[in-house]
Structure formats: C-alpha cells, structure tokens
Length: 221
Length: 221
Image (cartoon, rainbow over all chains, first blue to last red; front, side, top):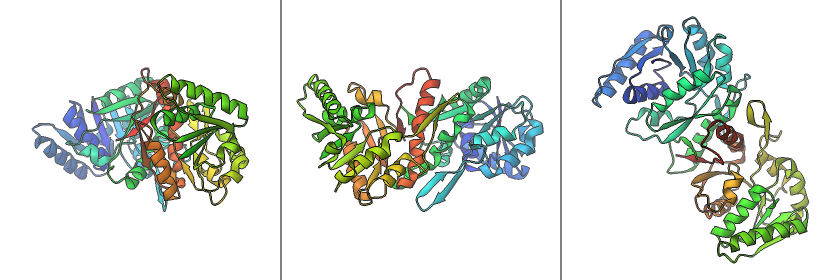
C-alpha cells in the first residue's frame, strides 16, 4: 500500500509516518506545500528509523505530487487548511481513499471545546470538499501527537473510524491496525464523527486536571 | 455519607445503588415519584446484595423525602425529567451536593447522536435548575447501566467529573472511587460537560458496529 501523508511535516503526520515506517512495509510519501520541506522532514524520519536499525525509504514531495498514485491519502493538516489542501490535490485522488484526522477546537477560560464547522464535523467537511467519487474515512482523531511520534511509547489505545464506504473504511482499519498497540474500531458513518472529534479537546482537559496523566488516548472497554 | 438516588428505580440508579451497596458503607436511599415503587426497588436491591452475603439496608421514599438529609443527591432521571425532578426536591437540598449523570441523545438512521439542551449540556441544565447555593457535579455519564448493575462484571473504566465547586467535586470523586474498578478523573468545570456527555451515544454506536463489544465504558490511557 502506498500512503501519502499530506501535511506530513506536522506533528500528527510525523507520528503516523514514524509508526507506519517502524511497524509496517507500506510505501510512505510525505507531502507539504513545499517539496523541499517535505523532503527534509522525510529525511529526518528516515534518520530516526535508521537509528533504530531500520533501513526505510520515505519520499517527500509537494502535496499534489505526493497524492498522485497513492492508494491512501491522509490529510494530516489543521482543520482550517483542510478544504484548501483537498482542493490542491483533488485531481490526483483517482482510486484513492482520503483519510481525515483533523479536529476543530477552540480554547476559552474553561478549557478546550469542540468547535465543529457548519458541515457538522471536520470529517464531513473533508467529505464535502473531496471529489464525489473519492471515499472519505475519518480516523486517527484522538491520538496524542507526541506519544504517537515517540516510538518508545506504548500505545494501547483505540482509534475510531467513520465512513460511508465500507471497503474504504476496511482499508483504513487495516492501516490503523498495522500500528502496534492501536486498535481500530468501527463507529459507523460520517454522521457519527462529531462525538469522536469532540473527544480530542476532552483529552486535553482531562490531562490538564489530572497530574499524572498526559498525552492521553482513549480505550473502549 | 448519605446518598439519595432520585430515579433510583431506573437502570443507572439501580447500578449505582448496587455498586455502592456492595463496595461501600454509605447510607443509601432510593427516590422515586411514588414512595411504594421506591421501597419495592430498594427491597429488590437488598435481596440482590443479600444473595451475595451482604446484609445492607436500603431505604425507599418519594424523591423529596429521599433528598431530605442526604449529603449527596444523584438525579438519576432521564434528561427530559431533570428540571421537574430538581424542582420537586429543591427545598430539601440544604448543604447537599447535586450530581447529574443524565445525557441527552437522539437516534436517527445513522446511529445515536448527542442532543444537548439549550443550556449547553444536561449537566449545565441541572446547574441552572438547582438552587443557587447547591453545588452541581456532573458524573457517571458514560457508564453502561447493565454492566454497572451486574455485580459479576468487572468495570475497569473511568468516570469524568465536571463541577465549578472543587469541594463538591472532590466529595463526588470519593464516592465514585469507592466503586471498585471505577476511576474518577477531573475534567474541569461544567462548561466542559458537552464533550463528556457526547461520549455516551458514541459508546452505543461503537458497540453496534463491533461484534464483540457491548456495554462499553471508556478508559483514558
């Protein structure tokens, strides 16, 4: 499987790239708005994996070049860049599955709060922005980026998947399950995304109010 | 500690009563709109505990009588009965902490969805309905009633607490922590309740889409 991680220079993109590089044999390409920056980060990830004895090649390219020929395209960009990012790669998404991990949050004096776009969720926004024949799957919403990118950290957590195309969801579940310690769980259609995305600000609030907890994930038991 | 469980004849009330009866020495009183029904259910719970070798007395009374002299009053009623229930006991809440476990949900073709009242959350609705000097704590929102009421079932899950009065929140955290396998976690103020309450419909959706999962709870790791 060839996976393009758009915004793969950001913190969630870094974590996914390192975990897939470490735990799987998937071909990885890091996308960014600037090809040079993508290649520099891809080299950093290769160096990190090499330091652990893994000789892995990770490509770097402009987002649209990264998306071309990828089987799965992960839009690992902030919610406010999501529509622009999808528009920029739309012509390259033939036969690809688009994955949306972004969440909209706002912070006030009380803590972090879920702040969905008018589409209802960020995942639904991605589905609206994607070409009609490109299946969209929401996944990886509630992962603490620092913990994901730290290959010494055990995960032991779940990721919830939503999507309206069962085959696409199954493809992404396999990718997620390839990461050691990450259990993919089906949460139904994209209409069920808001309650999943809302967990991310909650994880930050819980970590802020409980001394020994940080970089939290969630597990359904 | 004397705990009144209003709506204690319902399924979450039953679970809390049985767990506190089994795991702690707190005085318990079941409240209902009808005293006879409360007493009948209290007797059922006593019988269940007796079958496990525990000689526990559980009282039953009309909601307002149950609330009188209680240190903690749990409004274990559906969200649409919450305001009426609090109004009916408001004069009896002197020096009590009011606990709100209710969640507003709706179901459509896609699954269950969080449906908060205009107050922002059901916990905030409870705070609005309570007399001004009565501290309100949101807790026990994401517990599967059947699993809670089955004393043979291990919990191993968390409950998130929100409240604007630290002492009241601490009191409820102690009560929650008295239940074996239930870990109380502070999630900040009542403004942070929506994302917690939203987990409950999500738990139902996840259970519906994953064959081996049911009666789910959540754990933050």
